[in-house]
Amino acid sequence: MEYVSTRGGAPELDFRATMFAGLAPDGGLYVPKTIPRLKQKTIAALAGQSFEDIALRVITPFIGDSFSEETLRRCIQDAYDKFDHPARAPLVQIGQNHWLLELFHGPTLAFKDFAMQLIAQLFRVALRDRQQQIMVIGATSGDTGSAAIEAFRGIENTEVFVLFPHGRISDIQRLQMTTPSEKNVHALAVDGDFDDCQALVKAMFNDRKFRNEMRLVAMNSINWARILVQIVYYFSSAVRIGAPHRTLSYAVPTGNFGDIFAGFIAKSMGLPIKKLVVATNQNDILHRCLTGQGYFRGETRPSISPSMDIQVASNFERALYYAYGCSGSAIAELMDLFSQRGVEIDETALDSLVGVYGSGRVSEDETRATISKYQRKTGELLCPHSAIGVRVGEQWQERSVPMISLATAHPAKFVEAVEDSSGQCPTLPSRIADLHTRTERVCRVKNDLTEIQNYIRSIRDK
Image (cartoon, rainbow, N blue to C red; front, side, top):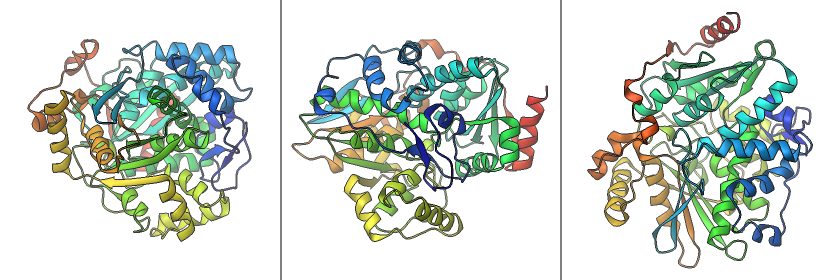
């Protein structure tokens, strides 16, 4: 299995090299050169299997010979042993033919744990072979950072740097990043919004001298390995509802487009998905784009669903790559224009996108109303992001097609918003109930590339 850049100007890599590279040297994102398809009988045979066994079957075709099957199996087992639900990603029925896929049973109570826990295990194996120090770096709007720190804390030859927007994430999200005591993890509070943090990370990767000197590795979903692992729960949930003999749709709370793009890969592999529905909050660049209003960023507005407060969805470039017929040159030109002023999407490409993706926008009041409604109706407490997915899932639901809405975080990560909306205060699991009493370690930094690069160098040189 080989991987190519969405912008067509980088050499092809195998899976292991792609995992270490993260961002392609031409500024593009890596995607598989070909997407493997699974036969219907292969998909049907996944029914009744454990999440770990499904993961091994779904991931293996993308790995090639980068890791042996035995090593991959062991890494998968070690990754998901830390989850507190035997199904790992259980389904809960919340309405007529409407299901909630709970993705918050991992160590940091968010869907990012599925990918990050396994990636950390793969890096542990790869680093043992390479015997080199690496700097794992990423930007977060809340959940990616805590999942990465939890996964990589204490791993030898690894320093982890997480950039998050100061004052724009929930208290629980911040504390999960700033209270680990391991010296190899570093939380950096940036004076700016998530898009600023993401731009800083991309700038560091595009600075080839700095990237090579520091041996940077991306933790964000710009890293293909992140997308790959998220494909698994589309398969595990679909076969429980009756796939491949039954078509179904998914509603996905969407900020950086990685989670829903994993659904596109699952669909391309043969999973019978009718619609992948993008659910956005008031920062609705993706909804505007998919409804024919062009791909133009707006001002990022803080919301009660802060993980979705994004106006530059990095992984949308991958979706555009396939919509533009896998033309690297077209994407290179398109993304250059987007960085300058935004772009109109070609009519043929837009038709391709809306053939796969639906979309919906949910206001702050609608988010609160949805949390309240489902607490009364089902007893299920939804975090604000999950509520947005459920609300848009309702709008796109068809009588004969099951809708699965992704619950991307535990409600206790957003206590204030959930309690204000439902009148019920969600509680943290006992294993992290003392989070508020732990000592924080955090470095406040300006939105300045040189300052952050110097900070990373200083850690390396200690």
